[in-house]
Amino acid sequence: MDYNSTRDKLIIPEYGRNVQKMAAFLLTIEDREKRTNMAKALVNVMAQLHPDQRDTADYKRKLWDHLHIISDFKLDVDGPFPAPLPEDRIGRPQRIPYPQEAIKFRPYGKNIAKMIEKATLFEDGPEKDALVKNIANHLKKSYLNWNRDSVNDELITDHLRDLSDGKLKLSEDMRLAHTNDLLSRNTGPGTNAPQNQSNNRRKKFNPKNDKSSNFRDLRNRKKN
Image 1 (cartoon, rainbow, N blue to C red):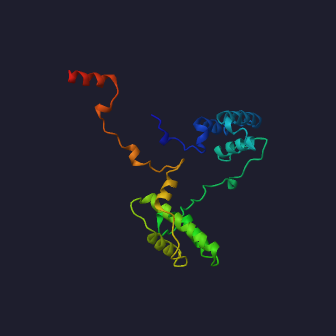
Image 2: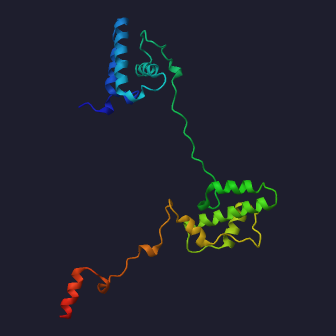
Image 3: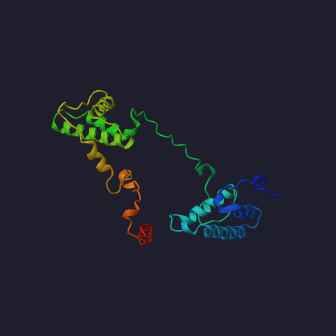
């Protein structure tokens, strides 16, 4: 039995093995004119396999280039475009490294760390104080996404100081937004925050409060 593992490797798998076999057959045709006509017919077959690519630029040239690549650049025909050279073939692109950044507090993310870095460049004044307060409120809101049980302004102040390397501090008279206000914003329309647990609690069933006819008849029978 003939297995794919024993066959020749597909050069461009998108066209399949039959196209690669026909491209190999073209190399055996000695008559140049006949070989050219057969190559044009094969390009039309390749176009039918990928009709969605017809709107792309240089669609026909791309098909002819692929035919030369499949034939290992050995095909000699009078095509409408010059044959590409083997050295012009683009190799596999280099692997893009995953960005690894040292984040002191991962629940806050790296964007807030960049905002804090920019805030340290501001001159002291009302504008900087308002910016620092907004950043601190954002830290508190982000912290509540991970831990809704306990959070206080002192903890957020410590985190702000650590993230800014001691360059940003909240004034003693500055108060952050209340926890309930931040939670109400997180549970607004379009958010994925969990709903109030009280809405999910099932009410205990009380037959006395049931108004259906079945339970009303059952109570009447017990009385009689």
